[in-house]
Every structure is written in structure tokens, then in C-alpha cells.
Image 1 (cartoon, rainbow, N blue to C red):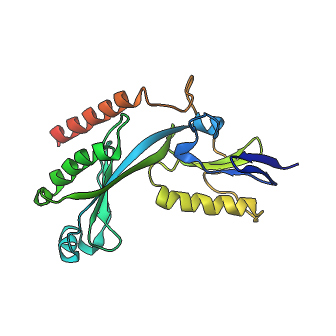
Image 2 (cartoon, one colour):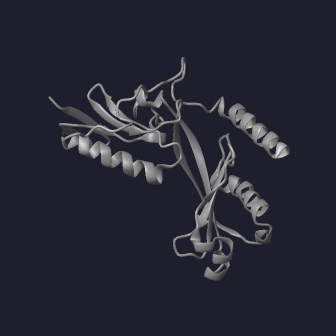
Image 3 (cartoon, rainbow, N blue to C red):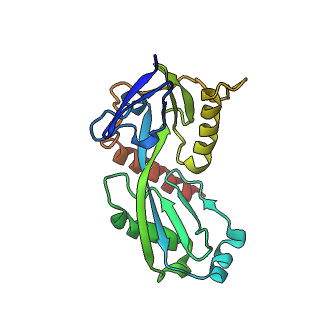
Length: 219
């Protein structure tokens, strides 16, 4: 019984396996988790960090160091850095393949549209990574072919992945009543979808941007 897991450095034998590849479920070889990849839509989250602005200025912009996200379909999310000296600004800066350096310009424009007084503030860091959405917009935990999974945090993985991880750990440990609201829900996919949405994302992103523009005009 159990499982044999092959890695680049050798094989591991385990009684249980938990797949937590989320936005990276379809790797370059297409072998990370094909079943899971067909049910997840990876999107790039792009983030910038400004130069140091000082704690007093940050407090003026973010009273109480609040974390903020807007309500658009193509949303922005931003907050002070943990040391309270910089602004961290993230968003869907591109729905096409783009580097963090390329999208930093767009994110800076988004930031200054919200805070015009930051127009001359420099960006010192930029990075990107995959988040994962599902077709029903719900996170999922469950078991497929004896393998546990937890995925689909809808871009809120800092909070949701912690919660999912705790719940799955309780299941693996055999805790009593270790069943939760999102456990074992039907996990939908779409016909012909294999886990790589790159060809369709620009169209979806354009449609969402148009709807955001219409909403602003109607406001």
C-alpha cells in the first residue's frame, strides 16, 4: 500500500500524499497534477514595492496601516509594508505573458490614479507569481484516487491556504469530525480545458475591463 513519489533527487514512499500545487499544478512537463490542473485557472498576480516613504506618510495614506482592495473585476490590492515604510501594490496588470519589470509601469499608473501625490515615488522592487481560481469560484479540498488536495484560493491564499492546510492536516491525522464545508464538493472543469488558459485570458481580461469601465460610467 501507500504511494511512491518520484523526485529529481530520488523516490519517496509515503502512506498519504497531499498535493498543494495550486497555481502551479501544470508544470513545464505537464506532470505536476493533470487532474487538478484541469480544474484550476492560474493567473499571474503582479506586485510592486515603492521606495521608503516614512512611517508618517504611510500613516496619512493608510490610517491604522489598513489593507485595501477595490471592488472591480480587474482589481487592485494594496497595503503598507510590514515595517510601515513602503507601499506594496498588487493587481492584474496583464492578462498576457509579461515580466514583473514590464508590469511595474502599469501598477505604478494604477497607484498614482488612486494616490496622485505619489506620481514621483519610485518603484524599487517588482515580482510576480501564480494564483489559482476555480470555475465555481470556491476553494476545494478533497481526495482523488487516494491523493488529498487543497487548491483554488481565488487570489486570497495568505488567509485561505492557512485555513485549508489546517483542515487537510486534521483529515490526514484522522481527527474526529474532520469534515468541513468545502470538503468533497463537486470540482468542476470545462470541456477541452487542460490547465493552460493563456490563449483565452486576454479576451476574458478585456471583457472584465470593459465591464469595469461601464460600471464607472454609470456610477
